[in-house]
Amino acid sequence: MTTTPAQPLPVVLAGARGHGRWHLHNIRRLEERGLVRLAGVCELKALTDDELDGFGTPEQSDDFDALLASTGARIAVVCTPIPSHADLALTAAERGAHVLLEKPPAPSLTEFRRIVDGVERAGVACQIGFQSLGSHATAAIRGRVASGAIGEPLGIGAAGAWVRDEAYYRRAPWAGQRRLDGADVVDGVLTNPLAHAVATALALDGTTAADDVAGVETELFRANAIQSDDTSCVRVTTVRGSRITVAATLCAEQSAEPYVLIHGTRGRITFWYRQDRVLLQRAHDDAEEIQYGRTDLLENLVEHLTLGVRLLVPPAATGAFMRVLEAVRLAPDPVQLPMSAWRTEPAASLAGSPAPVQSAPRRVVRGIDGLVAASADSLSLYSEIGVPWALPAEVNHS
Image 1: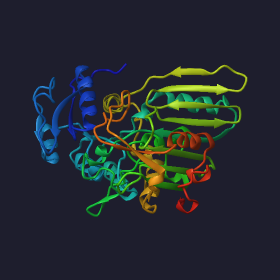
Image 2 (image 1 turned 90 degrees about the horizontal axis):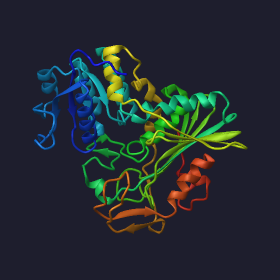
Image 3 (image 1 turned 180 degrees about the vertical axis):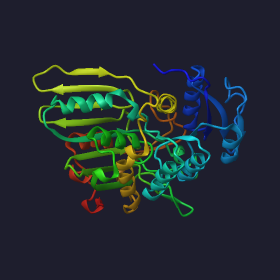
């Protein structure tokens, strides 16, 4: 159980709208437990009293550096557009504030290394916001695999089938972009909305450092009128020779819970990482389903600072993910799918979907739900499972 610090740690949140609302809610939860205090909010437009309900009157400013200085923040939570991550993280580090940095940590390997060097030089802690890596299931699954529960490991596949409408790509100038005003963004399905599938699959394999990755193959496609990819797959080969594939789309028929599938010679383990739910299946044995808990990453950062506990997702634990992001960044631009490969669905409300309520038409890639699952089942790229629009020439090796 977390020990309450003598004084709640002052926190500044940069980016409190959009996904930042989740961080605002989480800070309120920890504030009620006496662990943190929302000292400041950095937004271009100040939050309203309704948006800050229950928080009192934290300082507000669009000047992040000045806000850190005036509040004396011990922790900065950065949930801003991807191209701004490095500069804001380093601004916080230079002020002596420890950082919770939303994923993906940076839009390029160069920017990522700039963050790593900067936080090390400043002597501050940095936690990368891959919340799924706080799941207690991660260590448990690795333990089961190491004990031979599913025999010899054969590889890991991950599948993500989500729905996003056309308004999703109009919510911000950087949405769905590979580059904007000359700067890298890399807001593709594998590198942002379903980046957790990539990071979780790599972590379950024990492939976390950049040097653990031997090679990356990418197949990037788009049905929407965007720069970046919305329907893609990737295969990572590690220095140990293991294979990890991730297939994902934002053009699904129906949104489904993303999962990671660990294949073995005598069984397999399915991990629905957003739910912390695990299914172990073995030949001649009853299936075993287990629900695990999760450690919140901001709470873990507080415990790291006050109790010295191990940080769950330091930058070094995301180096392999950044190698995948870099392969996507350097790959040829995503291939526009032919009109025969997708259809337009009218605006509709999707109950139970992880996507926002539909407010605009959306594009659906025909049969993609099954193709994503087939990739995870077979550890294959789209071009290897008979998809007519996935030509072998579109596979990029790096």
